[in-house]
Every structure is written in C-alpha cells, then in structure tokens.
Amino acid sequence: MAMRAQTVAKLRAMKLSGMAKGYEDQMIMPDTQALPFDPRFGLLVDQEEADRMNRRYQGKLRTAKLREKAAIEDIDYIPGRGLDKARMMELASCAWVKAKQGILITGPTGVGKTFVACALAHKAMQHGYTARYVRLPRLLHEIQLAKADGSYLKVMAAIARVDVLIIDDWGIAPLSGEQRREVLEVVEDRYGTRSLLMASQLPVDQWFEAIGDATIADAIMDRIVHGAHRIEISGGSVRKIRAVKPSAPTAPEEG
Image (tube, rainbow, N blue to C red):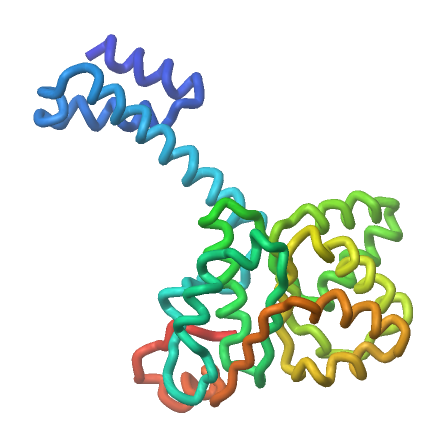
C-alpha cells in the first residue's frame, strides 16, 4: 500500500494527474487487475490523454467567457424561428472556422441569438479552436482603457489571436468616430485570418447606416459580410415566454 501511495504521489508530482487517477482506479477494480501489463498501461495512457484534453478545454472555456452554457443539441427548431437544423448541423462541423469565415446572427431581442452564438463557439472549442465572447460596448471600453494605459498593441494582438471572436449587441448604440475606427481595426485584423461571429438586433441591411460614416462603413461591411453565413432568427422572445408561464418547463435557450 505504501508503494502504491508513493507511486501516486510521484505521478501527481510529475503532473500526470490523469494517470494517477487511473492507477488508483485500477487498484480497486479486480477485472482491470487481471489484465496483462500492456493493456493496463495503455489504459493509464488513455486516461492521462483524456485528462489533459479536458483540462485544455476547461481552460479555453474560462478564457472564452461565454455568456450562455449552450450546446448545439439544445437548440429549439420549433416552426417560426427560421432555424434550419440541417444547416446548423453543417455549421457544427466547424468547417466555417477552418475556412476563416464569419457568421452573422440577427433577430429581435430575446429570441436566442446569444444562445446560438455560444453554442457554435462551444462546438468550435470542442474541435480544438479558441473562442471569446464580448459585447460590443465592453469591447470598445476595453480598447479605450488599453489606449490609456499603453497596452493597446498587446490587447489588440490578443483579440486577433482568438480563432472565433463573438461580438454581441452589434449596433445597439451609435458609434463615435474613434469607435468606428476601433471596430475597423478589429475586423481588419481578422479578415481572412480568423473567424468573426456577430449578433445583432438589427437586420444586416441596416448595419451600414448604423455605423454612421460611409467610408468606414464600406470598409467594415466589406470585411464582415463577404463570405459570411447568415442566420436570421424570428419568433417571440424566450424571456417573455418564461415570464408569462413561470410554471412551464424551462426552455434551454435565452439571449
């Protein structure tokens, strides 16, 4: 027993926590103990690999700061929403991320735009990509602070490195001249190199006007609309449905 404890302690000291847990499990599982050495050792290696993959995923999840704990499997395809399951399953393959394409999600408040965006981001992370969720007002504030404290280049480089950047609440408020230029820098850094997923209450055909400057609007729209997949969600607000029927089963989506 003492030797087993020492072995487990050494494995954990070498940061082989998955293998340590697998070894402890094997010691209390008679069927596993009856196996030859090679299969038993293979199981330990498999558990260590799985443990490392899970830790990497959990790290990506913390960094992503997704607003919703969403999954593609939980999306509701009830009639009237405008969501096509076959198309969502195609997007779930993450070919759009590999191709460095964008997704534009539009629809009224509360119909599930944020949920769908976060579900797609979750799937991308499961495929090994990184993601980050941010509301446009928060992103602009972060950039403003970075300019003030001298970390602008560092912050912009970090944003540019993310494989899937989710910008929510696009067009929720008028942009100042400086903010337009900041948005242009963000989308320019991603054009053809990383994926951008944007969610907005405004239909795409109103985005040009919402940007507020024809020259910059041309540049921004050219970069975010070209080659992007569009998802237009319709129907009633999930939040309102919950408020009217508090005793009804809770829907998986919100946002």
